[in-house]
Image (cartoon, rainbow, N blue to C red):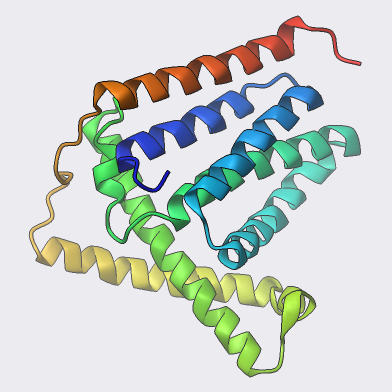
Length: 220
């Protein structure tokens, strides 16, 4: 799967995420099908397991605070659905070559301003991941080894420091981009071949079928 063009990989990831996001509430069978798709997607991209699990754990901490007040039954479905979406997109982002997010954006039928926003978000996500890696390394040097040690280290103060450091670096990166002549124009154009379009069409049909089926078939 890593041989696929970046544009196609992004579009396939978005199809899985959008299809799962539109599932009917408590459609566990169909969510399980999307979970299998997301897991196969992560395996095919050969995403680094440690980085993926660490990033998912940090993201789910934030989501749990938002979902749990909605009630256990609804919150559990929303958290699992969020896990499927995050697994898909994180697998794509973690296997993305450095500074190539703009190339992947070229294949999306979106306004230029929105593409620029996504491009900067992708650039800043790389900065955030770099800061997380540095803080994990610092935690290990202080004797906080293993999953339990990292969870103890991931408290409110650490999360706040992480975003402050990431924001500071993001501002410096953007200033450097402006100094080098960045004007919002994205990199080279990327077009899909016929075989790649068929792959995209097949995934679209599969995702559309699963999502529609979650509304039409009775749930046990």
